[in-house]
Amino acid sequence: MNVVRFSTEEPTKVSAEDLIEGLTMHGFKDVTNLDVNCGFVTFEHPYSENPIFDPEKHVFGNYFAGLFRIDKRSVPASALKKEVSEAVSRELDVSGKQYVSRARKKEITEETKARFLAKAAPNISFIPFVVDMTTGNGFFFFFFKSKFELFEVLFERAYGNMIYIDNICLFN
Image 1 (cartoon, one colour):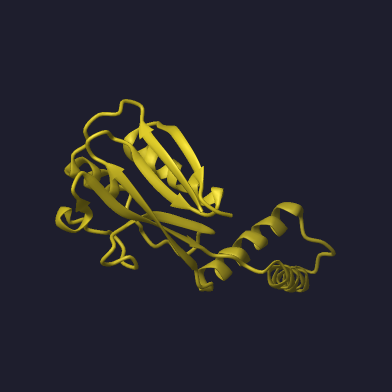
Image 2: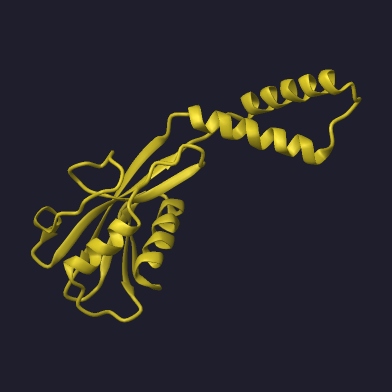
């Protein structure tokens, strides 16, 4: 597990209200046709959309604790390839042509993938984070760097550039 200690560009005192405003603005919203969907959620209702952060339940002394939710959907390549080839064959039979253009095949692939993603069950993961409201420093706990990169993008949208202070590897 890795722990990253981070801060915003200008580490200062952060109020719970400011944190809640940014987290709510970038809260989790379920979008079924995306490969990866992410956002901030509460501890009490991690599976709900549009989280409502209650300071009484998320503030512990000087620290604000929250969860970052990542939904990852995937389509097996073999199933996608089979479905696309069947769709191309159907289109060739209907049109009477001998081939389908590269652009049309790309459209068919995107349509098929979107249809599969809408039906695919997401692989859900939750990653905890803590922000010290007196210094503006935060801690994010993760196993995979790709998940931290998603958190980093969303956190920067909410609060500005993130500055790394430490990266601690607890165990592999």
